[in-house]
Length: 109
Length: 122
Image 1 (cartoon, one colour):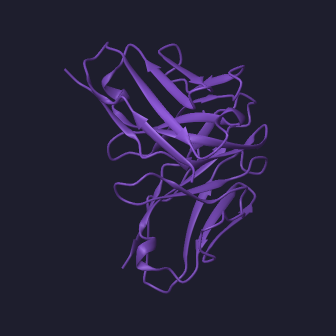
Image 2 (image 1 turned 90 degrees about the vertical axis):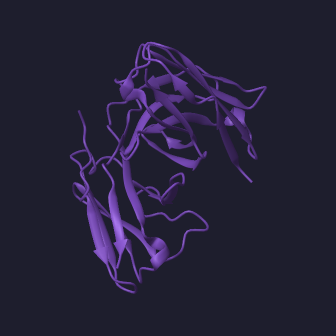
């Protein structure tokens, strides 16, 4: 089955840049999407179609894609950005199967 | 404001059934695909099922196919998930989500409800 691979954890200091990667064989053909989930809360969309930012999401959140990897970048990380981040894509079979990465815990030291 | 409010979660024995509901407001419900996504305690997100706005297409994760049924009532702005033959591994928070579809294969989830907890245990 199709899988998306994320690092389990990333740590940065406030004001630094955090990069979270998501790898999958289908990503050259499928878009990647990113969700932020804070403890006890529902996920929130932060990036769609690899690099588009929904309204209301701070400009410090950006996304990019290269080959089999999509990347979420948070520039000038703030303490409130500490959360779990999940990537999502489609398996490309045409059956609308949705796949999530295992999630990355971002710790702001 | 778009709102999705789930209900119907609770404790159920293995082999039992439960029906989840999701009340939608703040958008034209009948125009959107909808979905269920779940999250086991301390674990990641797992897509469960999608349902087209006119109910003509539905898709399920392999882990629930044949046991779960997604449905909707556009007149009541409501989405449902009928869960049968429940197993311990179905224990999770179940989220109702709106699907934004740009075209086939280009779709994402926004927004998410707050979720309802389903616990399968004897």
